[in-house]
Image (cartoon, rainbow, N blue to C red; front, side, top):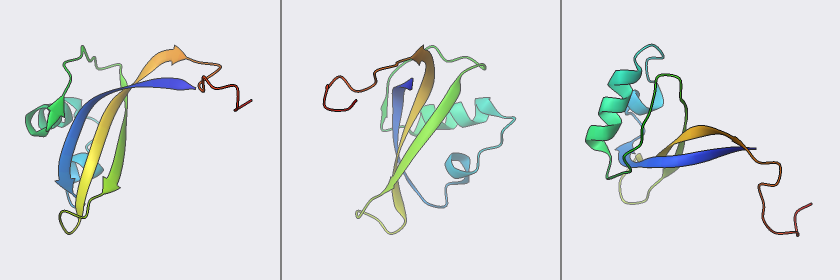
Length: 88
């Protein structure tokens, strides 16, 4: 299991092409867009070697509205992702 360091929260819509179909060769444009449009942003030291994950869900506040969390997949790997002993 890889850990994920969430760093951005955005409100957008389902047709936001920079979020849902980003150009794979233009990380700078994507990150500039995220930093400019994030409703909440944690300052992190991101590099061109980082791997990201976006988590998206619908919102009832707006037709086709979406909430998006963006995180960096860290190099940390946990062999016990659940602290509870209930999950073995």
